[in-house]
Image (cartoon, rainbow over all chains, first blue to last red; front, side):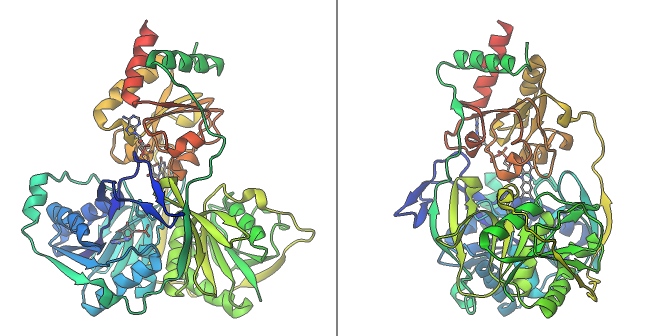
Length: 259
Length: 312
Ligand SMILES: Cc1cc2nc3c(=O)[nH]c(=O)nc-3n(C[C@H](O)[C@H](O)[C@H](O)COP(=O)(O)OP(=O)(O)OC[C@H]3O[C@@H](n4cnc5c(N)ncnc54)[C@H](O)[C@@H]3O)c2cc1C
Ligand SMILES: Nc1ncnc2c1ncn2[C@@H]1O[C@H](COP(=O)(O)O)[C@@H](O)[C@H]1O
């Protein structure tokens, strides 16, 4: 099996205060640490595991700026054979635009594959759409929320996809296909700094995205970025940790869950 | 004809409540509404939409992006192109929405949680709700939306007359992706939905070694330990203890969340708890917007101090 895996470099925002620039024209990402998109970590691992069984190769592809090379090195350290950077030079929020760049790239470079894996969603854009749009444009069968691959045969895959509330559906998908991989499908292998350094020795190819931007639509536009609307908000308990703990116990008693 | 097409979600014969959010958005958009739904008897108020279009297919054939292409072709043949196609932001909703956007070359905005009538734009979450983008389509024509559950239900209006019923038949069923069976989660040790008091931990606790001490605190407080998805993904806790859209929906008297940011998939599973207490070291964590009480603190420090206080 030859599997292409899309992997994206994203800012880690969980513990950071995000600031808007201008009148909400952009979000200031300049001081944030960056990392691999969590979902893509799982999909790289899944692809590598399959290829370890079936033979073939995993190719990691990232659309982004030169810094995205980092996630390609990481994928190679996990077992991908090649890393392709499609250097976009500008931020593409529209999932249609990202999927179209990917499509044009695959077509123009004549890249062959049995399956394409993406993550379910990117942590920053959260569109959960690039995989589906790409599949639609390629006219290939698609599934998202893939939480288990039970069989990988030359002509089909048996997969489990997650629905809501713990329910799953088992499906049969013809190969070639596009699958978006859900977090928790496996336990991604640990990647050491040494491993990533070693992976740097494998050449990564850089492609200038401008070539693939022909017909790339901007189908949606951002009016501006805003902070979330403040809802009621919580009553904040402040002070010494000990007194906060006592306050908390008071609340638990009042609610009748602790005596 | 100008109308909004709402693709309904039904699972094992149940009309999912989140469909109401799609219907609610449709009222805000002031469009004639057409609810697309597989053949079957569902418990629906037929005054909530203008038209119900029944598709001659079972639910698992219907909620399949490959078949949805053919279904849409038939709908367009019959009624013309919709102005907007609305899906729910769920497993099958996002799957079909993105696939339709690719196949029919349509703009798509997902996880929509607000609509500004004057500006004509949709609110879409970024960075797990820390920022929102105001989006609209560039140009004209049909566009695709997925709606965050809980966002628009309140805008549903009952009409004076029942919906007209239409049928969509003769769809092509794809051979390229087929449903085999539903797989249920195994029943397990604990049922977190029965607990009065949940102590819930998130990725913010850092690593698996911390679990034991949280378990100990839970025991001391007579609480049941649950977690957010990453905690379950990393196998720090078993799947049965996951709170959220792809885990369990819980409604305890007290939900004490430690090191959980408050992504909507998590919030959806616990927002109806009587009392929500959030402990997070980030003052901007979205969970504080849903909590009744909040503490800005390190979860481990608070845990350890709590134990000392309880023992003392
Ligand atoms: C289809 C789908 C289904 C999903 N279903 C679910 C679901 O059922 N349930 C669910 O929970 N998620 C679900 N998710 C994932 C969801 O989108 C979020 O990724 C997830 O909820 C984040 O979990 P978290 O808050 O534990 O982690 P993070 O978002 O990483 O947040 C960690 C928090 O811990 C805080 N923190 C860090 N260190 C400390 C410390 N020392 N002390 C205190 N606080 C600290 C940080 O400030 C941060 O707010 C789903 C996603 C998708 C796409
Ligand atoms: N710029 C990008 N480079 C590589 N992969 C991407 C990019 N954008 C999206 N993807 C892939 O598409 C998935 C879904 O992204 P999204 O539709 O933005 O939520 C991600 O998990 C990635 O696998």
